[in-house]
Amino acid sequence: MAYRGSPAARVILTVVRVVTALTFALLGPLFAVGVVVQLLWEINAWPGRRGTTLGAVLWGLLGAVLLVGPMVAWWFLIPRVRWWGVPVTILSALATFGVFFSRL
Image (cartoon, rainbow, N blue to C red):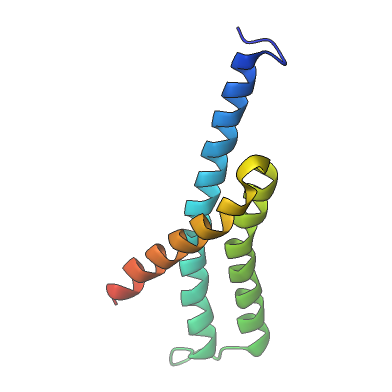
């Protein structure tokens, strides 16, 4: 059992923080793809449905939160390499959006 403040506890906590930060960096852009699709549906609504400007704005804000959230989480979870959160999240977003939109 690792005691609080022991080297083993610090290693375990660091591993948990890194895994959590990477999970946020991968899942944020994945969910943001769905938000972008919904945003596009609000702008160009299908027949029989009328999209709204408010809906488009709200979906756009949610997408921004999903892309910026992992960067902010990384800042607090892994203070030593806090700046790595930005490029990791951006690369994850580019890869996710690239894979999704290349299939359309």
